[in-house]
Length: 308
Ligand code: MEV
Image (cartoon, rainbow, N blue to C red; front, side, top):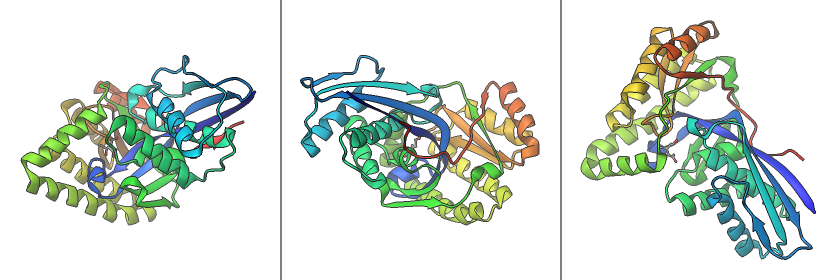
């Protein structure tokens, strides 16, 4: 019997959500909330897969099928356990983290020596198979970690040399669990209804991502905050914000944040604000007072990792 434990981080979208689905770049960071996959393999036993200890087995099961098909593995008895170090409700990407960790674990236990780009490609293929939509930005964060400039499917994958923890990012949970696939579909309907306006917004978000990238790299945090506000205006126009997110964003800004926006698909999940470290406490309090939950999150986490 062999066993392996692999972890992968969750993610937080900084700039460019939705537009990234339509080919524009985005900026995403891996966060210090990790998903753990434990994989046990007994090659002397006949083929059997035990998924009884996994809540949502769709991704793991699709990975096993894919590995059987692509690598013609001789699989005996597989037993998989997953453990999420964070609640799935926050939208940090538990499915993408479990997918990436499981692909890493399969590579290791069957001596395939897959590199990170191969882990990314296989994980993204699985997510598309199971979920049907998505840019793969969450898989990229789970695989490579750090801060990434990313274009759909990994067409561009740039690890930016910047530690975001030098300044203060406050993350607030809205208390509403959003359904990413549903919101992506609503946005697609918007495109069908108002194609010109839609393209204008998407192009503007893409341009904004390219403009904010050098501001981040030169630590011009206040300016980064302004870009968060601009990005939020476009997301509002796209119809993916809601009153609760707007309340938390306004509360953060009134408490001294340089800028704030929703993070992810919208309709709920989290918002993010940027400020100097001296304002952290006041912003966290303001978010809680406005009915949100302030989360203690660190950015730039390490990507997929073999623990033992
Ligand atoms: C969801 O967190 C971010 C979206 O851009 C979807 C995706 O990129 O897969 C809305």
